[in-house]
Length: 418
Ligand code: EPZ
Image (cartoon, rainbow, N blue to C red):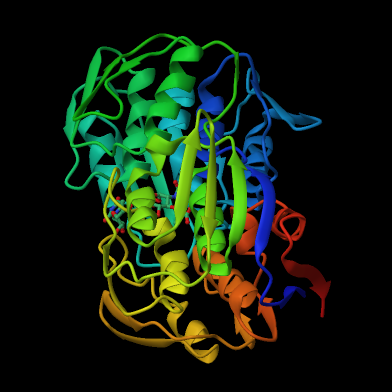
């Protein structure tokens, strides 16, 4: 089994480049199902979730190939409309294929999705939205059976601005007859990126990032070349790593307005930050003031995907920090692992109180999920002594060659087989 072996205490210096956004690439890969032609995605990191979506596309009959870091998908001859439990259950983004399959074949049979175990993660908003577009849906034997023969544009209001449901409905509306308007949509940058991708393929989508997404259905989508936005969660993770370990790093391929909420917190806690065009410089003495109070929220609030990493930083910051996790009901599985390393954390339901300690101590810890794993890597990089992080296949879902990137900044981390 692969693990990360980390010797803590090194400060970080040098340059790191942010890869393409996982949570933008995954819905875009699903959207490729609707495209009657070749899609070339440039500079695609081989996140294991990206590879998982490639498997799904291949199973449906699409041609998927790599040319260096470019990913080429040709779904012109795609015939399949069913996704098995083994493939769908491996990741959350398998559910994003519902809209595209309905547009392509007017029929879909998709097993329930998997993904990080951070809550129940229901799909009711996806399904009620698709029903609003005239899709007939039956859930049976662990599968979603969808029939889109009478699918057509309509007004859809989301009960919660779900990222995935917004993306599914954008794709379903893109090739449905008539006009679809999505009210109370998610506003994440990944939503805007999906709009840009769909429009590059000839769709007519507007309003993403705002309160209403407006879609004029078209007959078909043609191929295109596209590059996803930088991964704001990976970028935020690197910022927090430097804030925690100390040192001075330059992060390239960085869009500051995608991380405003985190930047304002870091500036309050005495990190030095300088933003220039598409890069950011951060320097830290590694002993910060606590953030005080942190509440995760939908974009542009503080992202839930940075909550575990912020908690790792707060476990060695001066003072007390209150963290409220508002998005997922079970996203504190990294807490017992951080406590093993000496962190002083108490939690009830979705609220945590962290009392900053002078230091953490190396230990054998296990990644509970993707971002919890990243938090444990951070803690290991700061802790005194050696830390072994297991379950790193979960970290590989959303960080590409993480140990190589961090070693290049001076961290003592390597991937071992045990
Ligand atoms: C996306 O998940 C991301 N994943 C998650 O990133 C991210 O944490 C999340 O959005 C929130 O930003 C991908 O894009 C692949 P949601 P998604 O639907 O779409 C509830 C990571 O670490 N909900 O916005 O599943 C849900 O239970 C991952 O990169 C329903 O109740 O998130 C949650 O409480 C983790 N019914 C809230 O909405 C539904 O039908 C937000 O979920 C859908 C969602």
